[in-house]
Length: 330
Image 1 (spheres, rainbow, N blue to C red):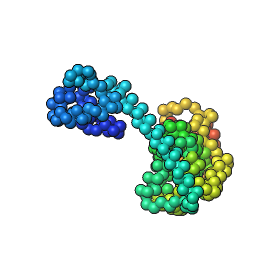
Image 2: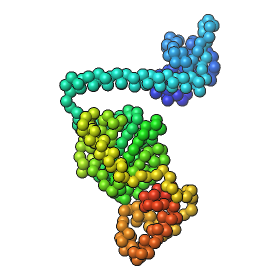
Image 3: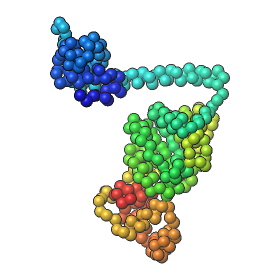
Image 4: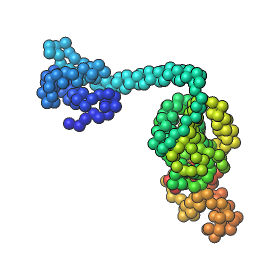
C-alpha cells in the first residue's frame, strides 16, 4: 500500500495515514475491523483514529461499536491546511511579541548591532531564513565576483517570496550580465514573476535588505566564496546601507517585464549571422572587437547590430538578450 507521505508534513503519522487511506476505499469500518485489516492491535488502531477525528479527516457514527467514516479528501485536507495556516499565523503574532522583548533587551544595554556568520552552511541558512521571513520588501544589489565566475545563481526562494506578495527590488551589475548569457534568462524569469529589476554599470558590493530591518552583506567584497557574512540590525549603519541602495536605484536603468516594442515570441530560427552576433553581444564584446572578430567594417557592424535589435523589437542590448532568450535563440 502506498503511503500518503505528504500528510506527514501536516502532522499525520504513518499509521494514521494507512488508516485514512484504508477508510477511503472501504468508506466505513469499526476500529477492530481496521486493526485486523492493517495487522495491528485494536488498541493501536483506536489510538491512531483519535488524531484523525481531531483534525476532521475521520468522523464516527453513534453505533455500538462505532464505525469510522472518512471525510472527502478535498474537504478534509483543505481544512487541515487551513488549521496549519492558522497555527503559522499564530507563530507570526508570537514573533511580533518576542521582537518587543528583543527590543527591550537592546534598550537595556545590547550594543552588538552587527553579527558575523562563519561557514557556508551558516551563511546560506541565515540568508534563506531572512528571505522566507520577509513580509513587505526585499532590496538587493547583485554584482560579481561569483563562485565559479558563473554569474547570478537562480534563487528559487525568491519565486515563493514574490508569490506571497513581497516586493522585491534588485539592481544588477552590467558586468554580471555581460559575463554570463544565462544571467539574462534568470533575470527575465524573476522579472516575469514580479521582481522590479534595474541594471547599472558598477555596484560597490553585494547587499540584501529585508523589510528595512536587517541587512545581509558578504564578509568579503572581492572574494566569491560564502565563507562569511555580516548581518546588520536596525541602526544608523542599516540606514546608510538603505540610503545607498535607494541612490543606486534612482540612477539605474529599469528592466521592463515587456519591452515596449517587443514582438510576440516566435519559433522562427535566427539566421547564422544573428546567432554569431548574439553570442558576441552577450559576451560583452564591444562593437570594435566584434567588427575585428567577424572581419566586418565598424560601420557594417553597427548597421547589423541595429538590424538585429529591430528584428527582436528591442531598444537596448539588454532587451535584445531578453527577447532572444524568450524566442529560444540563446
